Length: 279
Image 1 (cartoon, rainbow, N blue to C red):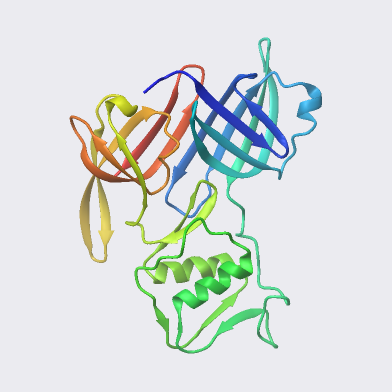
Image 2: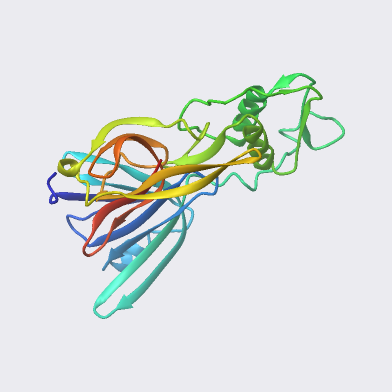
């Protein structure tokens, strides 16, 4: 793989920045838990007029790759902007939270279906998928993939949603044997073992750096602990690799099909890489 012709495109609000004109660095983490990750972008020597256009709560995204092969690494909403001087350089750090924040949305008089309380009620025998779809709609979530459940639980006594809607959504998803996580800025609901086939093989000539190192984690299944082996991998920056990406790895140590579950994309003065863990 060509290590040159690196491409970085940063969008904040209606402002677009590229590494053709500016020095840009970033770190964009990803993982398979519900908590949204925070990415950090550093842009060098922006003019004061440009800085005045950058605001908290604007949309933000990182696209990166190589000429002819660029993709989105993460997108979200700006949480903080800090500018400081280091020697002769003025460095603006832009932090953004992946996806949108739905955690503060409560049941209101507009979303309740109860006359005597602020709650959303589901009748006896309602299945989990029905509840999930309703709550996703109420929250205004745009999912990054179709909902997939390991089991569609039936709530024989019905189900009541009160206060913070996201808490109840998480509970029902968990009851149905699935998880919620962010993938390139959009929420996904599906079992942890299911991923997105990137149709990509990572090997030396597609950017693999060194040999993946093996690790072992304990995966608790009910009353039993199950040992799961995986690999820590480093490669030239690869936008196809993110949360729950399914890819093939060919190397001296790891050979087969794996699911990425945690990692980060890094661009700094020296590196333009993706580091990730997979099982």
